[in-house]
Image 1 (spheres, rainbow, N blue to C red):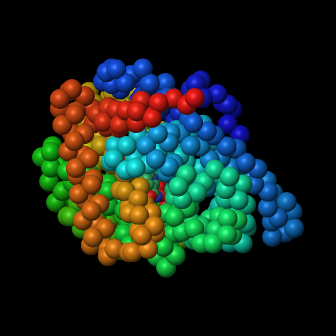
Image 2: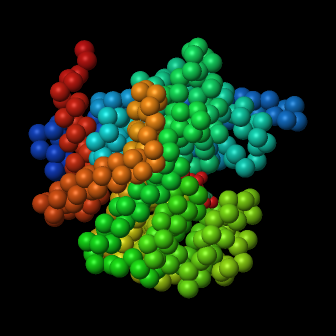
Image 3: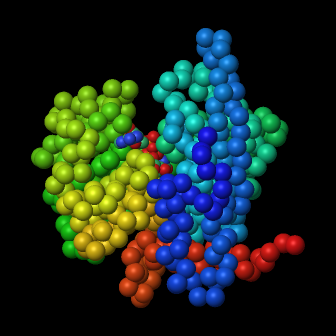
Length: 424
Ligand code: NAD
């Protein structure tokens, strides 16, 4: 359980505290809408649920689950579900708020939400994992739905888990409600391109960032922290564009090769329980040394709070692409800006996933499915339009891309709030 049960007093150095500071920084750019800004600092609704299951050995285990709906002024809640032993209510609050900003930044008709279960899924059998997923879905079933709040995959959750969530919700309401979650398997209303969408979005925004600072992707050295859905796909796309992936860190450790890691061999190995460190085509180094590896582009794609002030001071990267949510603490953000390092912030950099989730939801409602080229062309266009608009805002006010993204997004969110008015 999170120690902090208040919306307004974050635990020091917590993701929620980081988010609140990010909001404070944008208030001067909101004009008259600033009078609504407190809305951004409080989730609309936070649900804590008990998830009891009978384990394979006959014992009964209890897990704690959360679903937070941060803001729904612009549409239904949207956001992933994370299975991780360190998940807290406060972390889920921050992740839900970042979803609000992200969906508004790319102008999708959604609000922001997020969910999580405090569990280590690697310690569960497949049957136990299914039971945890189904019981959690049933417990949060009172607030999710195709028109109210639509979960998706996040850390340690995948298409199979989304299929169980869709089935459980459907059984409880009667009928087949494919639109209740996104990131589903293809034959259950999933969308082509969804699995790779977040990594692809990191590549699209990173390619533009590199172009704007005059960094040639051919031969560029890239360090990637987190080598799951987001990190491995982004790495693959950059390697295809001619970059060298010189360092990879996952939960098993750090592996480096200054000539570039062979991704065709590393990716299948990293997917096994043995993880990236069991790959023989590079040297294993201590985790702390990952931040010292000379690189041109740094892609944090694991968890929050990874780029600390100390790490920001020493990185040689010219470009940071935030595949993960909340990887940079505010102090480190300032240091990177002072050092002239361009940061493409999470709320636009990793928005490719929710964009293709939106395509999936639209396709489910129309029961008409697009081919992969159409998905990728539309994804590229939406992300580039959003990024260009954000860049213009950053140039106009001489602010960082992060503050500019918040300015664009928060104006849309608070305008919707103002136009809808307060009930009663
Ligand atoms: P994933 O479960 O597929 O992969 C997570 C990766 O992080 C794994 O390689 C794991 O080994 C690594 N990792 C975990 N703990 C670590 C640690 N302490 N140090 C180093 N590596 C560690 O998850 P994902 O879906 O790729 O999500 C990664 C990040 O991207 C998260 O911050 C998530 O919120 C964000 N994100 C994901 C999506 C999506 O569509 N999946 C969309 C937007 C943002």
